[in-house]
Length: 465
Image 1 (cartoon, rainbow, N blue to C red):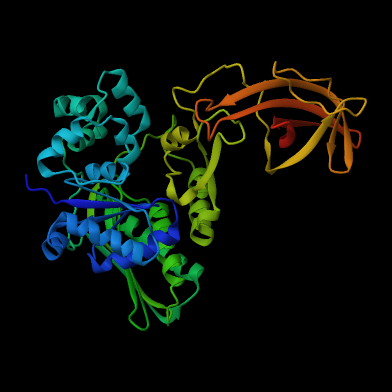
Image 2: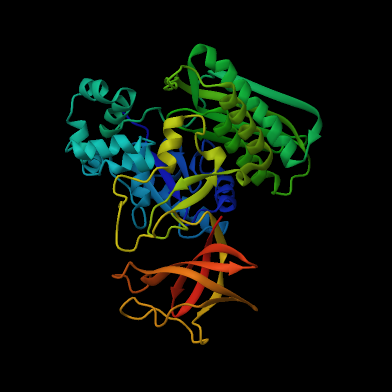
């Protein structure tokens, strides 16, 4: 099969502004730049290789363009599919995977790349490991019908990816339009919030037109044009399709970054051209059937807030680690699927390897109110001697007071210390701390705090509400 070669450009850091600047600059290489995620771009190579004289020349050109706009240390991977190019770009320095090595390169990859770069359910990836299918080569060796029978549509997708194909073709030119919406504004829009709201209406219009046909948009071209014919066009892709909130979030990012480019006029025209669709996958309903009115009202409220406030609307996501105050992070609501209960449950549920008990675990629940930034305090005993944690992980004396600035709070009870040694093998990142839970008297009311001792200093990191 004659596959379209692609290049994936990965930024060294997650910076939306740099990504936008790089995408604008790379228009001189090819106009059909596909936005992969918050730190990566995809370029079809068929046109650029003919014009610049080979893949190595195109890679050198991409690096030169990035440096010219102040984006250094980009990594470029080239391959015969989106997955191969992305994995190649993630390697140190990036590299070109030759056509003849395409299948060998894929076969050696662990199936975890399907979760990291192809939006495959983590539970399915975990099951593949338990079934002994630890590499893409092993997955490709299973009959396609067997994977589809066992995993449904996800099994079919995994077979396509593991055998070196893409779920949707990478194209160097626009495809036949599947659905098209646009809006024209007699009074140009120059306020970002107004533009994003108008774009969100187009996104909902796209979804409402495709939904009765049982389809969902996977690849769209979004274009915004000012009164002075300044334009910004971006290709957005998601293998499993965009919900209205997901597409609105991407349009918001595109508009906000572009409006900061000192435009000479407001936006007078915007359009969304759906280039690729797929059959909408069924969503598992609740025990009693469809979702309730409260669910739909909540989704609509979240979508409205995202359209207005963008990344300021956040939801929790499990990140792991031994620090209870950083095991969960807040991620933009527009970049996750809030309507899918399975996806929401997986987002906040610890992974299979999360330890249930360990020697440094905090007793009971973690603090409900994180103190950010951490506040330095002092812990003293009844005779005002500083309390430290000894090398044997014991208090040097019984804590009597917590000194918070100019205020002293009596310690009614304390628990700990619980020692934690993280990354002890890494001289640059190793960390040794001890935690203490304590009940303190604040204005005749008992309040529970979580304190951490590090480098012989005490820090207040959380409170129990």
